[in-house]
Length: 202
Image (tube, rainbow, N blue to C red; front, top):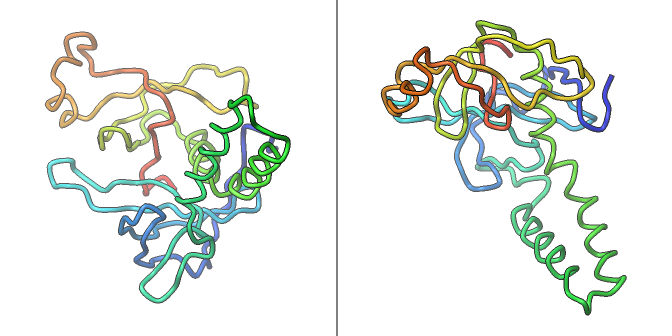
């Protein structure tokens, strides 16, 4: 069951976005590999090419309304500008001269943006929570790959996992050899904010 922090992800195999070459809201080219429905929102799993030395594809997610193609504009245009506008409104609220109208404008824009802003987070955690030891994971921060090593009992199952123990691939350890000095087995605990399951798992 969904709550404020967790969510169920349901595949949408007939999504018209599947297989399309798209541009995300930051202007990056990508390919739509999967589409899921999470909390009533359709969220795409995207891949983009990485240099061969990185050993694979970058994996990330984005609400389908933010995607565009050569002949299709995004359903939610100007999302990046609206994020900047929201940040400016929030900053203005800390000014002693801020008014109730300023607060209302902030809350109204926040409500408009929220489903799109948090869609990737909810999908990623829903998929990561399904991962099991031995599953392959993509680490977004460094564009590394790793293998899920083990799971704790995680008694608070109504909360998303905030960290997982993974065994980094040899290519990552060669890139950052100092890690082996502290973790000779290559096993480290990392935040799930940087993780996506690989495509063969989803």
